[in-house]
Image 1 (cartoon, helix red, strand yellow):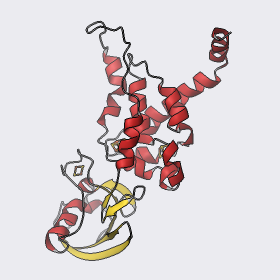
Image 2 (image 1 turned 90 degrees about the horizontal axis):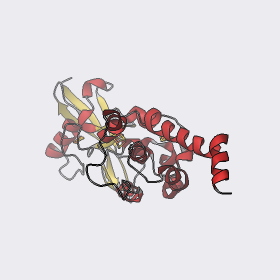
Image 3 (image 1 turned 45 degrees about the vertical axis):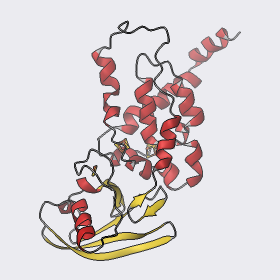
Image 4 (image 1 turned 180 degrees about the vertical axis):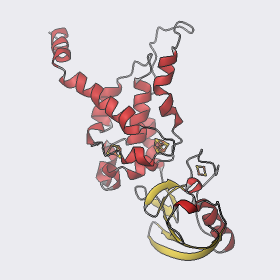
Amino acid sequence: MAGDLSLRVWRGDASGGELVEYLVPVQKGEVVLDAVLRLQATQAGDLAVRWNCKAGKCGSCSAEINGRPKLMCMARLSALPYGRVTVTPLRTFPIIRDLVCDVSWNYDRDRRVACFAPPPDLAPGEYRMFREDVGRSQEFRKCIECWLCQDVCHVIRDHEENKPSYAGPRFFIRHAELAMHPLDTGDRLRELREEDGLGLCNVTKCCTEVCPAGIKITDNAIIAMKERIADRCHDPLVRLVRAWRHR
Ligand code: SF4
Ligand code: F3S
Ligand code: FES
């Protein structure tokens, strides 16, 4: 696709804004970020946009393209409906300016996830990791912290009031990564249930659909953790053993 693209970009700040339409020349093989940066270089020098690697690795250029959360640097123009593209900032987080929003809520949630906690009496070299142990959580380490899954999850996208009690899919996989580590002694299930609101997730799988790292967030992390919680809380045998221990 080469020619002029009708590019509609949300312009504004916390006090309000609107979609502004520009005509931007584009070349074959380009992505949305190319068009946005050309717009910034030639017609809208004050356009605020966040980006870094241009290779789908840093997670900075997240936005909503035609209403769908995506990385701008990975969104090929040829894969979008011809001639007109709309770019808006992530809807779930407060606007700073134009396409840049304040994602610090995610970093606050991150700090609330308890650190990896190996047994205190384990000396260096006393434990060898097996291939399966490493492989189990490897997928979750591919996260680039783009916050697209957090943006799309309706639990906070449509309900601001849930933010204090909900960690979101990115941190469900962080908990799963730690819970699946054979040496971690942290009580991840309690945190997930009581502090991070895993119960509010109703498994819509939207987070998995938008993840640019291809992490199977719902199947491999969320459902796995929900099953562990169900086992702990509702398995009659586990409850019997727990009751017996607390006699
Ligand atoms: Fe982005 Fe995927 Fe990480 Fe969510 S899990 S922050 S969508 S890379
Ligand atoms: Fe939200 Fe993903 Fe659950 S989008 S509702 S965390 S499956
Ligand atoms: Fe780094 Fe898009 S610029 S992921």
